[in-house]
Image 1 (cartoon, rainbow, N blue to C red):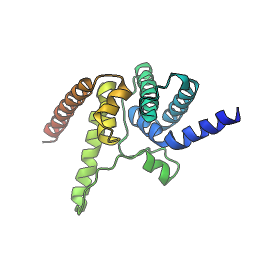
Image 2 (image 1 turned 45 degrees about the vertical axis):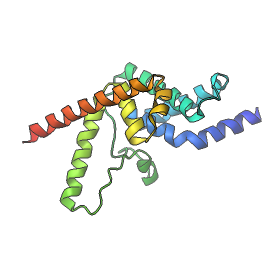
Image 3 (image 1 turned 120 degrees about the vertical axis):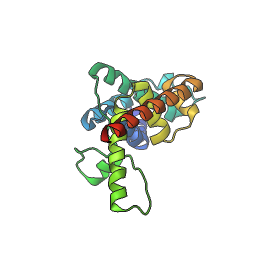
Image 4 (image 1 turned 45 degrees about the horizontal axis):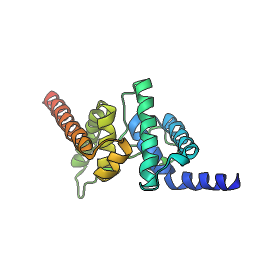
Length: 184
């Protein structure tokens, strides 16, 4: 039993932040994301015997977390994703965990403000993507995961991942173009 507790603690320490980050970016609610992340770890720990050591452990764990988040989204139909960090963060470290950074060097204050505005528009556009597209975009463009790992996590062929990303980008382009047209 003590070995189980130590293994569970190590699992939590090593993957807590990335699993929480993935789930939070999927559902946009810090408290729910914390609960879902914890539930994902419990699920993973209780099903360690189903883990195939031929694959990366992180992919298996992310797959569990991703499926759990998608199940939650389907039940709750939540419409938002945060890109700036949680407004409910209790400290700067917690806010940083949930932030997607759009880097720009040597920007004027006006350019910085435009970048923040664009970030908000991107956030809105990502929030309305189908869960599968949202997962693919977050894993590829936020978590910088390779296609092969995304395919493992989502339990789909690599071609499907590429199709999801292609369609998601097209939808994002259309939505961002629509928002820009409204501004003019």
